[in-house]
Image (tube, rainbow, N blue to C red):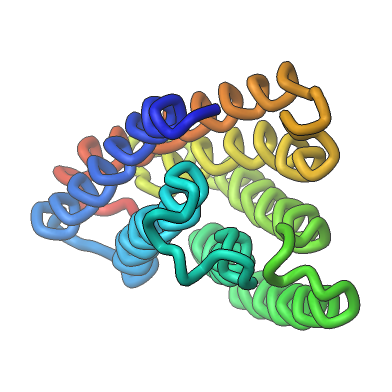
Length: 240
């Protein structure tokens, strides 16, 4: 993949991220009542967009043969793994909290918070033991984070099925977010975990192409769910 192919792949995702942030800000201004967790969701999407923009420095440096960002060459910052190794724990702290908070059950929120703290401590220990903070994504962080997020979404769906909220799913922003994130995690986590074993340099072009397409379409689906949810729920009166 050259820099042109990379940006052709990355551009649709970037546009959707900007669109999701824009729709989120619109939702905050237009919705009659906005919960605290929904405000945090929009801030989280803004953070995600900033991380994605910052992360392009490594790509630009690599494909320009370090004509740009030459100061990162042969340093721990040559790759952007460190940036996403910071971002991933943040997302795992926020997303389970967001979904479990919608169940309105304090014990679940408390237990999820404790599990998230254990996850963060485990991630720190993993990086200290294997020294992988700059060199690679944390397999532990990806797998444990995915399980925690999927578990929290499962609790969220189970709570909807057991209550009258199922009658108002179309008015709930959290429902659209849950569907998008659930699909994204299921599709991309196995790909991310295997990516360190399959590279173009070792002749695995088919896997790399599969990875690119899976991540692309998973992002398109997820952010489309976010945008749809923000726009539909911007006129709601009660549910978030």
